[in-house]
Length: 321
Ligand SMILES: Nc1ncnc2c1ncn2[C@@H]1O[C@H](COP(=O)(O)OP(=O)(O)O)[C@@H](O)[C@H]1O
Ligand SMILES: [Mg+2]
Image (cartoon, rainbow, N blue to C red; front, side, top):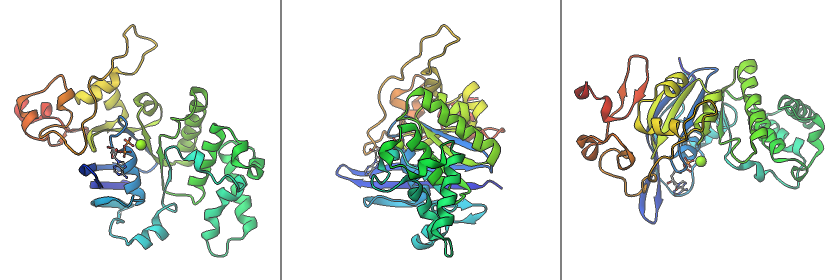
């Protein structure tokens, strides 16, 4: 049984230009101990998907539907209050995109890491502080960082603190939303190594959200490619990296600079669609180099191959074989 199983998740927002379907029927599962990469350009709906999983929804939500099972238990049906008490942070936690600058500037770092522990009845301040120091060590910081204020830390250190905070209640699943995109390459590599270690040593299960397929390739067991609110292709990391089928995945892969080959990285032409005025057929069709007539008329269904590799593209329909 997968740890997390999500079916047909949808989240849309009310905007001045009409309803915006940020997450438009997303289904995937994550196995225990595995890392699923969610990859796509800015605006694809990656952060919205993460917020939907955490059930942290902005005020202008128009609709939020779907099915979510955690360890086989339907958690979508829980009330907001029960979700907050039982699931958020305890079972599913998150490192928010760009959040390292939202640490409380007037509270010592150790206290901020310890704070969620104090929600546990019977947990003393001293126990919480000791746990916070242990967690700081786990993310390879000196435990004395507990006595620092956020402004005394570098960006990479702050991001480690954010990861420590997400791990403090020992969640089953951690969502990392672009955890390294604000950091320089060296620090990025250090954080990635930390995540790799957690994966091998703690068997941590995670969702790794990034716009950078190369980064995902380094850490992920499986990869889901998102475009305009949908997963257009998903499969094992190997399948997606060695044999991408969706024209968008192929272009994403071709846009990665390669050190060992004499080919220049290619840019993906065009821009993502206007999310409140989506095309009738395939959302990627206006940028696609392999368009069929059908792509203009009908949204493609998901075609599933024997290996579990899924592609939402008319090129893989039976009628084309
Ligand atoms: N609170 C919101 N209200 C209205 N539109 C939003 C809101 N948050 C995100 N969006 C829109 O939803 C789409 C997906 O955004 P987002 O989930 O942030 O994508 P990503 O994380 O992949 O960049 C974008 O078109 C974005 O402009
Ligand atoms: Mg985002």
